Image (cartoon, rainbow, N blue to C red; front, side, top):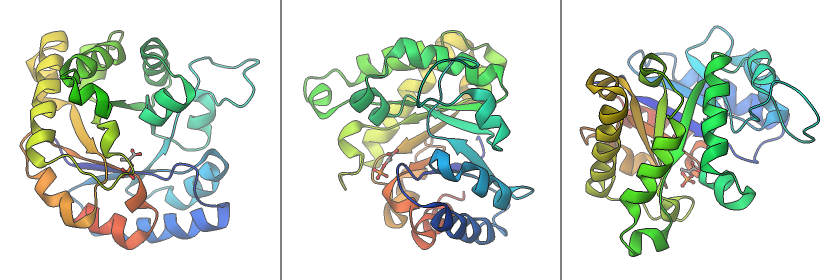
Length: 252
Ligand code: PEP
């Protein structure tokens, strides 16, 4: 069983001072949880400050998105090397808000995954269907297309240490969580896709997180599913007690 992993996506929340306070509380709160990996993804403006606080701690630092180019005239974007420079170990790629609000395509996620790995950043590759896609029985087609693109140029060794996050779009920020059974059937489907593309050993090693209205009171039933290896958390990661509650509930 892969070691559980819980990631907090702070999205466009927290000033630098607020981010420092939350990062300190998370760092101190997970200190005794030796059996789980934890990372936080603050907004770009707070990465360096949070990176200082987390340096030498158990908590990883993640970017929320990234451009695939090394440098250049890309106003508003951030490069893999800049994320590394700020202390990041991980980067969230293809989050549904990037895909649906900012037009990020499967091709873009594919290039970004390659660029992240080239810069020693672990990609957290988000996939998931919209409500309309679920209601028209396209969940598996969408998840297959997104997963296949995201891992297309990733070697088996790299895929084994990458992370996939299944985030049904209808469950993000809506308070509607996929049932543990709904999550499990998509997670095992993703694991089989990875087995087909990268081999059984990689499929066993890759971590597949669930995201979509995870809260302290539903985290343990989701993580209890055999193919759910942790959680990508939005709203409930903005306050230390609820995020730490999810981390505690995700320890196996
Ligand atoms: C997310 O945005 O990745 C997410 C899972 O958000 P929430 O937990 O708020 O649904």
